[in-house]
Length: 123
Ligand SMILES: [Zn+2]
Image (cartoon, rainbow, N blue to C red):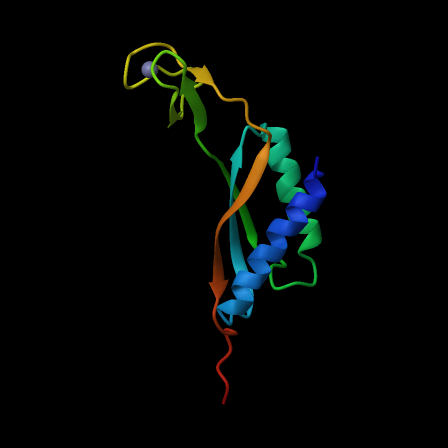
């Protein structure tokens, strides 16, 4: 299993590559979506990204994490899969209680906000 730090580094690299491809001078905000992560895990993700971003375009960027929906599967009707914000969910097709699909704790880069140029105008 990949460690949190390696995962955070990969996501930061992805964000930096995206910023460079946009010709950005710096990243002002990083948005991450998390699945199955506790608040402590989210906090440690933010801390690790912050540490790793020193001396990169993302230094000083705001780091925002938000929870993705839970995923469910219904075994009563053709294994329908769906997503829900709830901890328990009813299958929208047949009304039976659906089983939560256990997810590995995962993070993904959602989007970044960048500053396209330095604030100071060239003379
Ligand atoms: Zn169903």
